[in-house]
Image 1 (cartoon, rainbow, N blue to C red):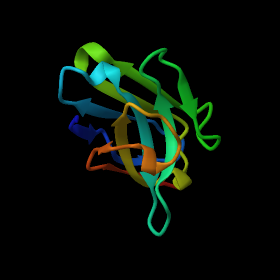
Image 2 (cartoon, one colour):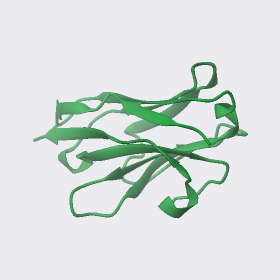
Image 3 (cartoon, one colour):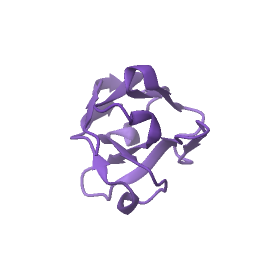
Image 4 (cartoon, rainbow, N blue to C red):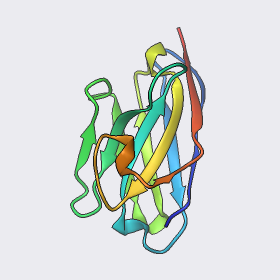
Length: 122
């Protein structure tokens, strides 16, 4: 099991940028796949981006392709989500998740952080 803590959320104007961090405990963090999800009020939690443990391959939801970049620094036990060209519809609580499995459904992921709020004003 791994504990996850997100940070870096905040209020930003449309077109701006934020970088979220997901810090993990445990020496085996590099063996986990990591993903970012988000949940807007009244909506289901949705997959945003993920990075695989074995080959570092990154996967993105269509809604964020070309604007968001996920990366990891295993030496720091941290995964990042760089978010550029933010839009009001990106407003949500952002969660990171870790698991040995990988998929776009929340059911796959066993370990979750507490979330960080991102608000994009128009």
